[in-house]
Image (cartoon, rainbow, N blue to C red; front, side, top):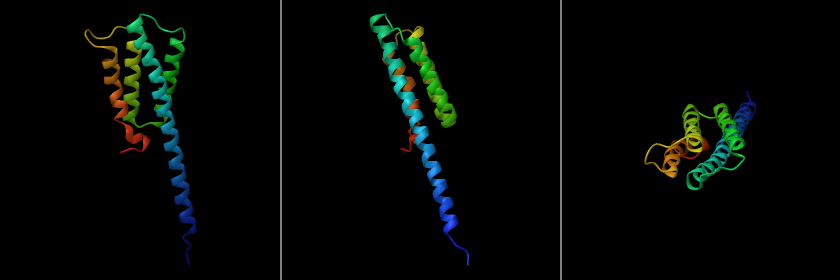
Length: 124
């Protein structure tokens, strides 16, 4: 007689590994969103007040590092969305925006594709 027990244990181990990977991916996304918000605030300060904090380079470096984490754990769609959003944040922080576009609209347009990849977080 063949026991079902080993097969069940393999399934449980696979399910646990998948859950751990989803949690790592979720953390990578949330960390990216956190630093993106901080860099977005810096970009808004630049346009509204004409100044940026001293740690602007450290914040943008951290943003790119967190985007690299997504390159490891995220789907191609999420990788593309976060990279393009990081590029927009860099433009808003260090360069000029397109004529007639507010910093808020510019960043919101770039952030929308990131949010649309919410299935990466397990939301449908």
